[in-house]
Image 1 (spheres, rainbow, N blue to C red):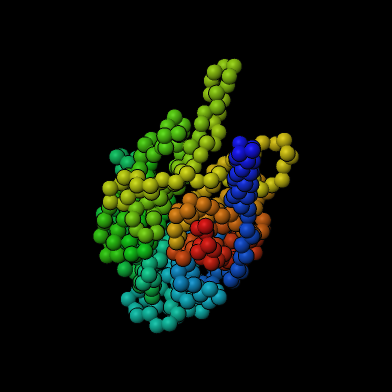
Image 2 (cartoon, helix red, strand yellow; image 1 turned 90 degrees about the horizontal axis):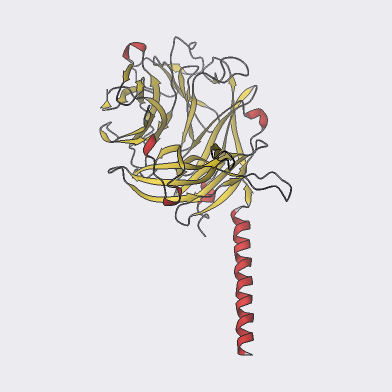
Length: 409
């Protein structure tokens, strides 16, 4: 009897464990619809309260439009119009810095020359070439990528990159302050920018793409260069289980706390044709996030990330096809991962670094709003976007900051 009792208890324990695992698996793949808030819209055109997203109707823009949101204020760099707008969350135009050769004189803002003192809502001229990536620090200093004139461009044989970009700095009133280059204030232009970030202590991190990989430059609030880290394309980190597979960088971003960088690397295995014994293709294997120390360049932590599986219904005999999420950013102890499903639906996954768990959210973005889309993640975890529809640019946000506190179990 004693033996039978133990067997029964063991069987019960197995059933309980199986049930728990089943529930955990179901919960880990459950999706919560996150309500979006429509804030305001801007029309298309050349006036100060309009955007120029498209050079020709239905074609992709040749220059970037990027936004940053801080404390409920939107900062928009509109490359096609060569201007930077400051807007309230209600859509009120608060200030503008613009290239007067590509914009008409402002009607609703008070013009101000570059040396004047800002009084209220003002517009200030600056000879932008192609404003792009944008970031804002705690003092509302505006950092904007711009392209230098042809006469200042050069080619660096060591990095295999064309040096064409600088980061302009403007005060909260739109006054031009200076620009950052590779060595700091007034330095050599950067290669192509892939990211511009402000950390919790107001350091500026510029991440660039070169012929051999990526370079991250970190500057203090004065513009003094603190560190330069190079990441080689042929020397990406690999976990032991992926040592023989192909490593592909998805994205490198600055850690919000200023400690260093976060790299997301995807790994792919080769498919070998069994008859010819030759490579027939590659298939996705896994994704990992790597935390790099900003001072030493050493990898100090790593996390295997969940895979994305289509939410579209399929037949029971069809295999699940897993693929990688894309790294969208980091805020408040979570990695933000994004994916578009086969039907065009948009999903976000919030991977909690502490608990190593992830929750999935569905975001409503209408098909007509996908002519152009640019997203921005605030330090608190508010995801903002400008979505280009046929007739207007819509500014929206999703309050992920309300979800972050409940991520860890």
